[in-house]
Length: 248
Image (cartoon, rainbow, N blue to C red; front, side):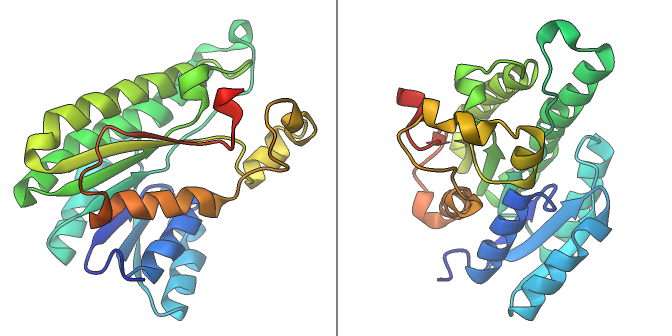
């Protein structure tokens, strides 16, 4: 308990199931949790739930694809709380198509959501953290960014680009005591997985010895650890949460 006591933690697109699970756990661990979304109505119930359980949380409108929106939300956080300790980037989107079937709109949308949101976040967050000579940035990537996946290009390609940004930022900002890490989950039980890829559950046993999908808590606990002072010597790490798929 209280691993994040006194810390200000921002979660982008906190309406997603991993973001929600992380927000609840972070509040339980003592963090002030700033939940953002392009439509705050999506996260109002989450804020209410955190407060009902005795936690501290706030909802801010934030389009993470916009650099100006990043400036605005960070300015609000700093003016209200005086600092920001951790950013958890949950913003992502995919398009399950063969590469030859992708449209220009598909490419632009995935790049804007997956890459631009993260780069703008880094660009605007790092100077704020440099002021305090401290910070932790955690990017939610995917196993497919490491190994690729059929019918998920350019999602997997852009996640690999994200990997390079994460490693470069970790190296460049280590002298400022800013840590940048990524988490690479796969086959985590979410509504999107169940509805978008209904065949995954039946095919799952082809790729793992584990009996079922992972849970969002498996990811959230790692996020809490990386945001905490317990992980003060960890930067540039790629935490793979996939049962045993990457080794099969």
